[in-house]
Image (cartoon, rainbow, N blue to C red; front, side):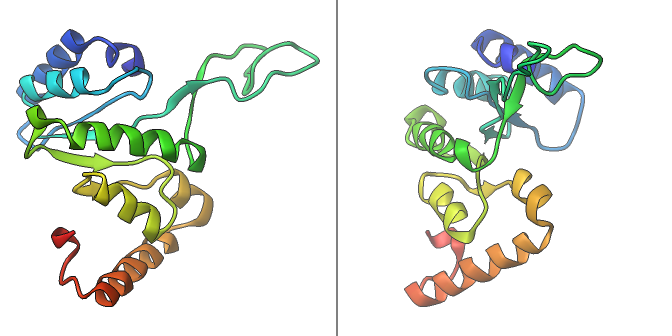
Amino acid sequence: LGSDIGQVPELVERFTKAAKRSTTIPVLAKLTPNVAVMSPAAEAALRGGADGIAAINTIKSIVGVSPYTYVSAPAVKGKSAVGGYSGTAVKPIALRFIAEIGQNPNLKGMHISGMGGIETWRDALEFILMGAGSVQITTAVMQYGYRIIDELKAGLNYYLAQMGVPSVKDI
């Protein structure tokens, strides 16, 4: 699994190199939060040729256990596995990792795409303030629909105007 590979910097470097050899488009290495510190994996992705870092991926978890079958949820035909947890609950963890890699001098200038619990313009702004050059939103779009993107853009634009900042890049 990617979350297992992402815990071993040498494998992050090797898989990133393989991805770069196989395409001409930019490659963002999506890093796992299932580590104590993310910098070693981020630096390995850079050595492997990554054009940027995407952080964080989902957190390994079990979201529940059936009291009748004793199998973790979700189960298919009585079998299950450890899954990935996402959404607003992971935002503090995501911000911590974005701050860590954003402040790492060895990664200076590397693009960071932040994700994990972003639902509002303010959430997106917090990721940008911690070092993200872009943000990604999936769980919130699945929950609320694509309108959330228009609301996020409108909120950020209003904030920028309020603060007298010409562009989000200037933050």
